[in-house]
Image 1 (cartoon, each protein chain N blue to C red):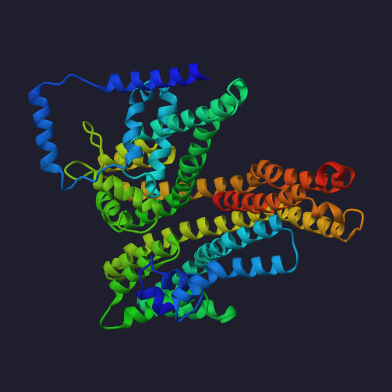
Image 2 (image 1 turned 45 degrees about the horizontal axis):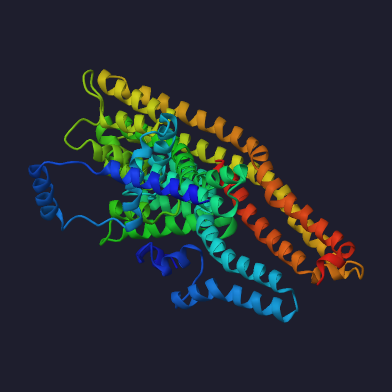
Length: 265
Length: 295
């Protein structure tokens, strides 16, 4: 997967799927399946289970839109996971570069330390790959760091690559002159990223309460569907259309609210 | 209805006539020659965009405040790769055209209902602005605001290592992200002129910051101009700027996260509670009204 991310065109299907963490030998088939299969399965299941036409159509539309959103979300999630670990990576890098100015060795050690608790992560994989490229005679340190900037799923990681590239260019910190500047920048960026994580967690908390309403609606509807007195309501075309519209509106509203939450920080 | 259609046709004819100008033969031949000479490189505009030029006269009467607001939205939306190749008058004309289409639909549906007519004329430009301009512009603007403190920290590191401010900006503009893209725009705009301002001439960075209308970018451009003009102490002052930018961002991020709760109340009511209550009422009311609702 890392090979695909390192070599494929960022606009290609193979790159998008790899960035979303989906390993496949046939990107086109996988892409088609993700795009159309959920909608087809939902349509068949709802229709087969005897759900009203409007509800079936509403569910199929949601199933058509949701996988694309899910895939986009997975791609962005990779960047967010990288950002989550970056403050720790920054502080470890600063300590390691103080002891040893070799960027490749420092990156490898940081990757190993990040993997100790949870195993390979998107950030540790990126750092390990960069360290490997940096030690290769064909690529070299500067090119490896430029490659990292180009393929980085997060702007903050690309910035780290830029900073390290400069560190390498200045003869490993120009006898401590750039090291000091690097350390200060690292502290600032670390503070920014930590604050962003906290703010994102806080913003996500606010969205939790909004998730209760659709669950409440589903529970209420199930209750009424099992009630002989109200079961007839679900056979009325107007109610069916309203239910389908409500589902679609809630899904659309949720995407808007999730956007507001993400945009907040 | 006939009078309304006649009025609309008359307005349209007057607009078209107002665009017809008497031109001298020399001017016509010069334009014709220029058109033939440049024809290879020019992409022909789609038909609907050509039609927008008919509304050119109305665009002139758009309030300046609206023009400014749409101009800002267009500036940020372009940074996200949207509306590239569109000019501000074209975008304003598109708003007017959508209002006209809404009004025509209103005239066809309810010619005597003035409230509905006004609502139908106002909704399309409002939605166009909200979804196609304001929303992407807001996203890009927020993204730049989020990236700016990191960018300033990198700039301080570069300058701290002895690089000049102009060179550091050039290097950072080659990076990824929207902040770097914005810098790239300023650097590209500085070809053949100065990137940073002098006492007598405004630099490309300041000009770009002014065009963006963003207070943080303007403040950064002013700071960098001053530091460059001073020549000494840039390292310490920029390090201080980076620290304060980071602190400012951290405080702002905290406040924005707190405000999310109040920002999502309106969409929650509109998209969640209203449909919930509507469906609930319909389910409860259907058996009572089954005589009316069930065929």
